Image 1 (cartoon, helix red, strand yellow):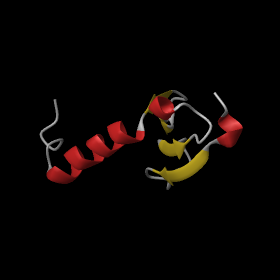
Image 2: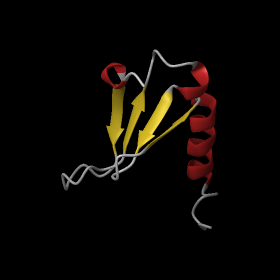
Image 3: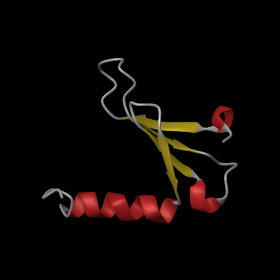
Length: 68
């Protein structure tokens, strides 16, 4: 992973300094892995921009409000 090339997009929370989840774009990664979401435990998931847009659309529509 080219961590030095990640472009920071946003930090979720960011008020506590505890390593909050963050969203990045890796412009050097293959398209299927350009969106990077890190969690507060040091792990990361990668996905394509269309996959990320699907998640955002679901969240905006309220489809994720009910939970599992």
